[in-house]
View 1 (cartoon, one colour):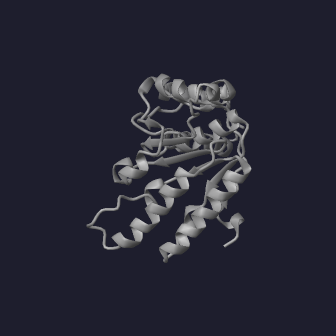
View 2 (tube, one colour):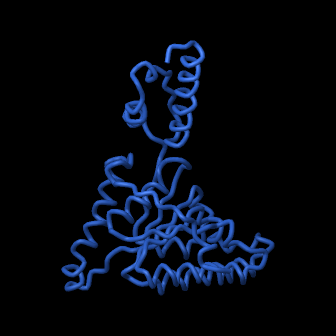
Length: 236
């Protein structure tokens, strides 16, 4: 399979300032970025730069956006694994496809982003009917991670860290948890989303206990409904 079929073409540029992160997560990511700024100084003391990051937690809470922002902050191109094209019925083909993407990211010194990592890094549990095949796949990924170049960055994301093989999880020097956003954070997010619309279309009922992705979809739906109503009434 061609390498272009194995990655998602996403040219969206995201600034770290535009990502909604809690204070702890923002500090971890800023520290990661500073490590690359001072990589030469750290190397003098034999201090390795973290280049394997696991983003874990609730769906829709900013993991993909954060990966893009890290790549942008580091001035690196991001390669996003196309999971639907990577996974084949035969594990051997899946492993070979993954290796192609790892090799490409390593050569280009890119950020490689593997979303839904649990789909290919599932625990090698004896209860799995395909345990032999899965073990071989996980072993391949472990080797690819172990030999991943230090001047490239690997970022993986999962909603289910508990089902990822423990040996794989140990390879990640930095793990960042993504929890559901608080009321205060969501209010700030609502304010930002609604600020792009006329004042009369900002008056919507705010819902909470939602992810950022769910809030964005909800706001877009509500504002579209208001806009269409005004157009039909001849107000706009």
